[in-house]
Image 1: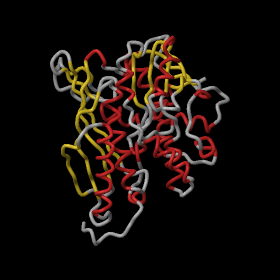
Image 2: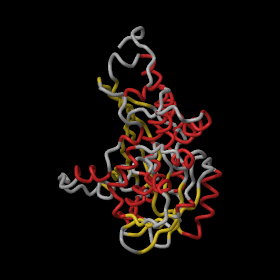
Image 3: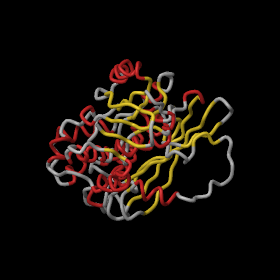
Image 4: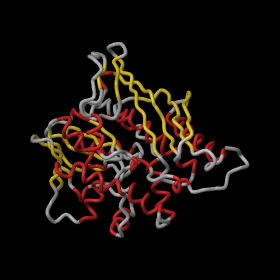
Length: 351
């Protein structure tokens, strides 16, 4: 790869998928992990793979937990700076979803040699570094490989006081549910790939996907907040189900109360749906109760893979309106109360 060799190319044209829509379907991931050896007892491993939580947490000294996570994917946009920023913001989100503060990151880079020029790769790395700088952390190293499709992301290390760890499994019956960002990123990316996304919609998508979920660290300081997870490739239904299964509860979501990106409904009605949306439904639809009259476009919203999506928060119901106000004031204007946690089987009910 040389500075002089490359011709500008759409990054998305080099990838069969993009963003968190690249994730393996939930059912495939479960099959892969089934029967995996635990590797022995580790009493200091506070959060592992048991409940499909956002990151691993290790007890450092009885007071502080060390958070470790990694996330990477192929491009959902062509602008290399935007790709880097989105991927980095998405990776850092897992630390905030655990209630922690990021400390440093390592870059993960795979590029098809001879197809992407050096300035483009530099711009991807610079975008990721800029997102990390906004989060107050360095990119302290990394690893790169020659790869058939462009891939970028981060491994991120964070820290959290043990009392502030917020797992997805700690939702309680009677809790209210809050979502901090609008849904529809996968729909927007599907439209983008077909040159059908308006400029203002693209700008809205970039603003959402590059907005750090740092409010998670603040929410974790509030005793009224019981559980947090971020909503990414499995959609609001998939990550809601992980919360329901982990906590042994039923989550009820009001479809009409979900915040949507401004053009999401119009675009999904035109047929802009990702393949990941269909895979998501095939993976977990049996554990979801939908109204008989729910239109298909709303179901596609529910399964839409979010890249760098918002936080799903379970909190004491009397505190919900206060928390929504605080989240909006912190820079998340689409935050909204979307449902409730109920006693019952580990299912998700849409009303």
